[in-house]
Amino acid sequence: MSAGSDLKSIVKAYDVRGIVGEQLTVDGARALGIAFAHLVGEESRTVITAHDMRDSSPALAAAFAEGVTAAGLDVIAAGLGSTDLLYFAAGRKNLPGAMFTASHNPAKYNGIKFCRAGAVPVSSESGLIQVREEAGDILDGTPAVTADVPGTVTEENLLGAYAECLLGLVDLTGIRPLHVVVDAGNGMAGYTVPAVLGSLGLTIEPMYFELDGNFPNHEANPLEPANLLDLQAKVRQTGADIGLAFDGDADRVFVVDEKGDPVSPSAITALIAERELAKNPGATILYNLISSKSVPEVVAEAGGVSVRTRVGHSFIKAEMARTGAIFGGEHSAHFYFADFFKADTGMLAALHVLAALGGQDGTLSELVAAYDRYSASGEINSTVADVPAALARIRAYADRTGSTVDEMDGVTVTLPAGDWFNVRASNTEPLLRLNVEAADTTRMVALRDEILGLIRSAAEVAPH
Image (cartoon, rainbow, N blue to C red; front, side, top):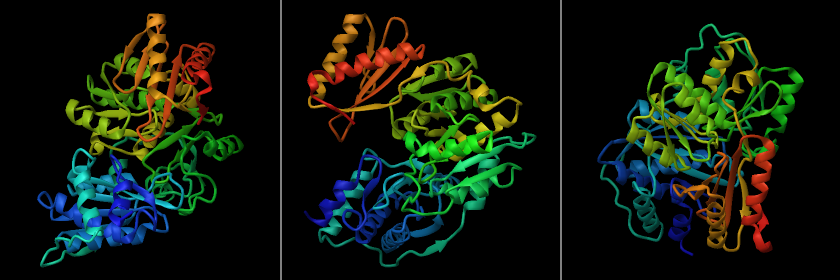
């Protein structure tokens, strides 16, 4: 396989993600820099970059900058940063950008997330294919088109400006002094949390703030229950008011209450939506289709308009632009804010939760009870030999039970009593992903097991 083919295999629909030194190399990063400069050169003469704490990130970012400057554009190198810090920089400066991170992937991986000026995402439908093809050709020996006069690289630390921006978006004046445990997972929250939360008069209990892209304590993926165990134990041990867990590049946040119990990301979506609607009456809120139905209920009760979207940040951001929505939430703990350049930011979501909790006297579990109205299964994956046949069984079940079906993203079935489930196929693996929600745990478990039986019929599958 050629070097260009290797590169093409790791340029996904929305970003670049691959094994360092094998699939993603410094030569590949340099070629991608040239190609990205050609993509955005008509809209901007400068590109901004940032990188996470992985061992390979500085060299990849530097090689990318070499490519951008060889193509004649300048680079502002922000250095260490979270993904939402890069979005802030691209939005505030109105520049295209590149973030070097593989989020929660293991240490051997790295990647790149691209955006256009104003933090507008770049996907396979908006330029990433062009970048992939040109960079692949360069790696396969096609001479790169470079400028007669190369650009320059300027270093600029934007952490302080990022923190100031976030703190200006949430009113935290007068909140009570909370005890907050933060698990950074050795990721970029260990860099950004002190800058953002350090001036708020909170008692911050840091866990794994040491920047280490080898993730020596646990994976930096808080959606996996095993990765929350340390945080849950620390919250219970210290009697903290709240626990926050960030993923590797700190664009997602997961919340644990004072009992050490996880708070549903849908409940956090509903809580923030209510707060944003208090500032913007009648505005539009987005939620993806595996979010709890409590989200549109809360939005309606708060006088807002809710719009249901497909799963995935590109769909949320496109709908935010189309509808003028002020906020959007995904059940994967991505939270998007119109006043943060329509980008996702775990830190701003955390500030909203801290403001809501600290602005009243009750516990977090009491606060979120109003937003957590149903019982959910969480996402359950099954490896399926024949995906179309399994989906056909799901549709037959819907017909048999008099349920309603929509196919916005996979198959969503709503039963006559109001319980619902969604089954979605993976784009890259023979997987079906199941999410179930019901009025109570007994009904959820019964429905979950019944649908898993249909998905895993005839012993054709194994749980994943």
